[in-house]
Image: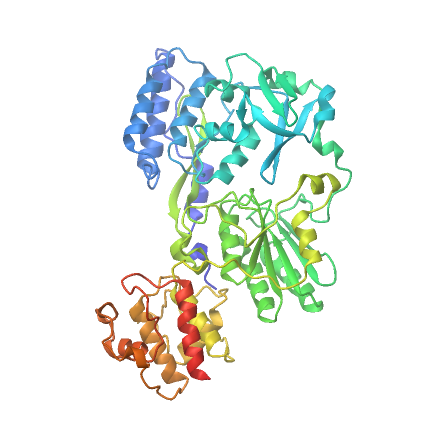
Length: 576
């Protein structure tokens, strides 16, 4: 069985490099070098060796001139700035890449100060989730402003330090660092050493003084987590993955990290799941990726193969995603859609297409560490489910955000909704997305009445084996509607051309033994020229004359999913 990781995203070398880290041989710093010289070496190494020479497209989001201007600005203060300021300068330079996987780590080489509070985001609002004990009654109040600015303005400002390719990831980074005083001061949001005003809904404002991390450890804090007296059955477990029934109809799988558990490899886990599903009568399987920040995307494939088999027997697959769904887990979520499953929850922190395959690095003098993307993972061209979506946060088919009320009550908002709504769900439609070759075969197959097929191996050499349209590919190959290349490949994720659509439609008419129809009355004119350029002219003419191609389409532009449905409906009409 081919996996996406073996088709394009092979990470063995990258994972080894993550352990070995990208760096030059480092000797003890030469005593005669000044602090400014040592920092300049680190700055040059970060910019030239790490970013320019090793990132796959470092200037994709920011012109080189902006990098060089910021680098020059940093060089002007290397002698005078603090270790914290130097760290934040390096973060700022790296953030210009605009890549969620490329970053300098916070706090590994500097003593940061913090404010005694934290926040959590629920829906579109931010809430106070920790504060000093005397302010405990204010927990769960909505936070409307920080340092006199709306919270989202502060989030945007933090984007200068935390490179992100979508706003969901940036908000998650902000939530994890929203109490670091040095960040507010560096960004000019708060004067150095001054308190941070935290404004709550209703007008109450907390004035928080910056503290050392040690001092914070000595404070008594009130936390939102202390108010939660029970956990839902789907609470995050201290395990790489686990599974259990939620009721007689719904089976639940929690997948928390894309790696094999030491005590239960994924193949063994998938076999256990298969046995339970075969022995039950479950109508729906929930695959929870909401706590999964990534690893190796191919690990889950034995489980996906089991679930795809269950789907063929009528079981529904629902993937759960949220802001923490990232990297390899994001790829797995799109694969769930490729299988025909539905995604429920909140927007993921990962983008559909993104830089990834992470390598580590360490700066030679300061020891400051970070991580770097080594390739661009374009799911727009690798999977039908990613077609047309590009570098944007993966959105669920059904948006059901976790509420603060449910958090306090120990309820899982999305899962509770799903348990209360057993009706079959549908993927969100993207009518204007590019129509891929694989999807068009699926549309034609359904138009033909979904004939029974025997899947004896993969229909084409480049089939993955989990696609929702896999039976359609097998049918199309057997019926000689789709013949593939000399090498046996089909390129299912490639956008369809109008000329290819005409050929597939003409062959489908022949294969289905449809009586050759008379030309449609209003199409006795010439075939549009764009349909005949470098194409099978006879197939183009037949599909046009028979009314199988949309009359008002712009044939200079690639067909869309909506137009594919229109063509499939026209074919189905001939079968009546």
